[in-house]
Image (cartoon, rainbow, N blue to C red; front, side):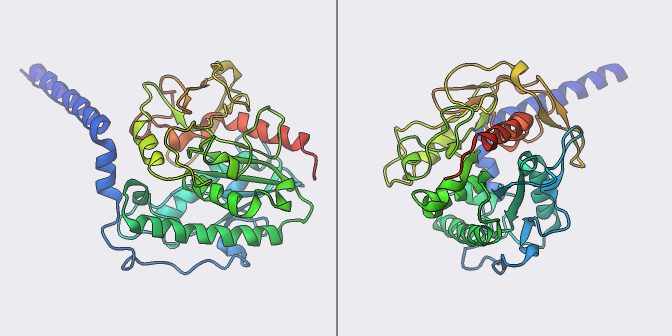
Length: 370
């Protein structure tokens, strides 16, 4: 009798897990939106004061700080003792609350997530560069799941901070240092706009080694002409890389629909255009499937405390016609924060950590100023 009752409990648990998975797959985007889209108007939403980027404490990472999370490295890697490159890195969305439209600076959980992303993403660049990563009043996670005008206002406020931070970065960085631009998710959205407004067609563009616009779709026809060309070889410089990681079966429809609803940086529509995909395992585009053996190191989370280890050979990738980077079946160690559609967005850098590190080192080595 006891054994039969136990089997019934197991069966019920399995049913609930399967049911939850089905609901998440079918309605995941809607459920997440209901939990994260702010319930207040933008006008009533609390807002922190804009950071003063002349102060080191206005930055999450800055060479003037005694230390910062972007200088972390896994075992076997080291920070450049005398970095010759200046890196401007824009962090992804880390504020998940629904009580305001823009991120507060005094929330411990939010700040811990920002530090975690600096360790797992910006650290890719510390082998060659000194990293500047500004605090900014980024839009809340829910701002990306609604078409309310309040969301656009929050994103504009965030971009204004990023723009001021970039101007301060250019003023503070060594005047002859090559520049790497990088970001992820919301950070990449702002970085694209910044490249259009501050870099493309201007003298500073000659100092740009590459721009890593990761985790955000970039249209070949209606975005790229207004920013930088796509990288066409593993040694190309002055160019842009972008990828979005999805497991199989890939469902890109919701992201593509949201992307198509807005115009590109050229003013032309996104709809009907192609999305750039640069395979981080090779540093070039194209449909060729790259086997896991070419992956020299994923940064695999070890514990909830933020620790991680490098594991080689675990994840392959290929660019699909949709512009998505297909990583095959979900890889071991990366299942915790997968978004609807098998979107491995959170892990865009971590899946290919050592390859991206080698990529930037290679491009810095090939870079010729001016």
